[in-house]
Image (tube, rainbow, N blue to C red; front, top):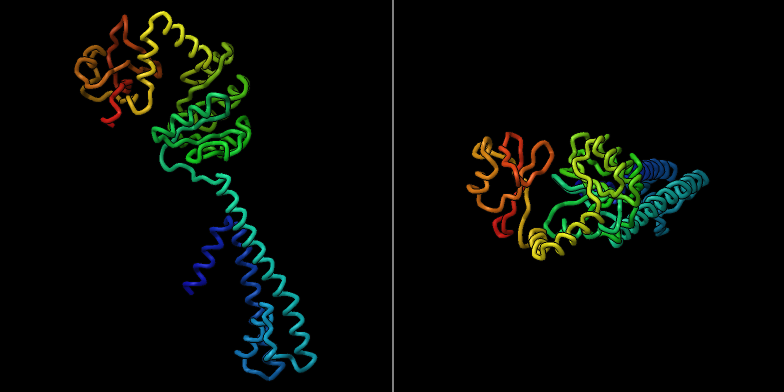
Amino acid sequence: MRHHGGVITLLFRVFNVHHGRHVVILLLTTGAIVLAGGGLFALTQSLPFTTGLYWAITTATTVGYGDVTPHNAVGRVVASILMLTTIPLLATVFALVTGAAAASGIRRILNMTTRFPEGTYRLVVGMNPTVPAILEELSQVGIPVVLAADVDAASVREDVHVVRGDPTDPATIRAAHPEGAEQALITGASDGDVLVSAVMVRKQAPNLTLTALTSSPSVREALRDLGVQQTVSTQELVARTLATSLETPHAGEMVAQLVEPGQHVLAEVEADGQTVGKALSAVRDERSGLVLGLVHDGRFTLGIGEDPVVAAGDRLLVAEPAHRR
């Protein structure tokens, strides 16, 4: 019984639950026919039931030793019915099993099957030229990522779970489970796609923190009305960074060191009882590591020119050496 239970479990793993149930039904039907056929054969040939069952099994499996054969017309009818039913049924089961095993192997080779991340993860929706580099950076620091985009899974890092489909399609967004993500990045081939995808994600996960890559001022305004906390233009970001580097040569080097993998770790830390009620400048003096600024009501401030007071629910953006994490 343990052996049969293992076979059934294996079938359910090879197939999904729906197809696995069909295979089990086929096997049970075949077994019932073999038992009934063996009993009828034994009765019509005046043989013990065990001999009739032996004959039915060898006939159904096409082994056919020939040591037990029907000796009258009724026995030949029973044999014909058994062969016409059990042999096609078993052939169907074997075809389904081998086909599913082959398909599973192909999916593994093509990296088409990855497990959905356990726990929290980051969601990236859509595809544009910056996404592969973003996925690379997130993977290097060990952050689980789910990508919802119409891309071949084989073209993406194997540790990224890909939900393949149109990112503006509600079904694709639902399959990506944005309600379980810690944060989402919305990208797309066009600003229109970004806006539509953001609407779909916001509908599925109203409280999820969203960042959108877009260049259109009107789309940015629409995204802010939608509750998207951050809208970024890749071109403007690169242009401003390079311009700042030209104006202040070492400013670009400072930014590069902050974001360089393995050197420093940027993190948002929730303000605790020791920091709430204090000015940001005082927190900077007391806290180890570099406090870059304060996040209040979803907005970031450097605290330059003003010295905001840390309130409950605020978060500190800090940079610490990677070896401390």
